[in-house]
Length: 433
Image (cartoon, one colour):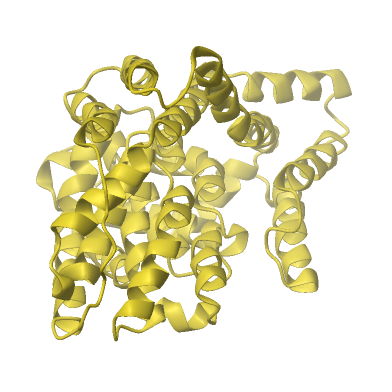
């Protein structure tokens, strides 16, 4: 097929990006903690380097480029969605939705299906909350309780939680990774969801079967009651259903916040002032991410103006001569960035603008490119022993993060599903002819 002509760009323009990656990785290697370096500090240092490069361009002009990139309409809309998603998640949790969802699953599952059930519960909570780490925090202690009262290894139990958490992190319409993928590629939430769903569903089904086979003979002595209220689960279901229907995500999230708030008020879970406080806590929890989006938008624009984006795309896609080649380029790009940053949201926001240009060059549908970004970043993130997800469950279980990785079946199968989707152009409707 014919491709669009592309400027070879300027490799030196990527120095600020290299500074960002080196600070992130270097601090992790030196301290043994890949989350020790505040990401905003690393990005700001990279911006300073970018501002003092290319002396042919006036400093005031570079400041203008920085603010235009950070203040782009897509960036600001992404910030608004992040804030609303944070508020919904916090209000729903404060109303008791998470506990009710967990207990509902534990109440209806037989003992020999507890691990499969734990995986499914994690899938539902993560797709409802939009956060893998939040799901892990909610379920890790439950998982340890199951491991202690059954003959199932703690590493396998934690692998089930991570697997389910990454399912929703990749698919949820209020996940920061989904929001970043959709906004950077210029597509719609419902379209990306549909494109993703048919790729990830086989991986989820096979994962559930594997956990079922491995634990079919597990003996359970769980005796505790698990009280739940089905009404408290409704806000999660409402957000999921209306998002799939194609309702604007702003309306969906505002409606979800209002619905969860009303349930909490009528059931006496919080007062009006406490509801307002929960909203503020939700916004505050997303402030760092919102600032990160703005700063990264400005950094990427500075790099683009200096020819760095064109250079990267030329190098990454020079061996690609077809639609499939372009898609593998996108998959490889976001995977490489994710290994470096150990953060799938950052990797999507960093690789997103490059993926957009690759998709335009090889005529890849925007919902397809958004889906590939989310799939491969989530699969890599779910397998990193130094990633927040595995570190979190390893800390609760007091076991080595490396011991959990072999049981993270879903991220492994997700990557395989992504590769097969590229090779066989599945699902068909996500590729532009």
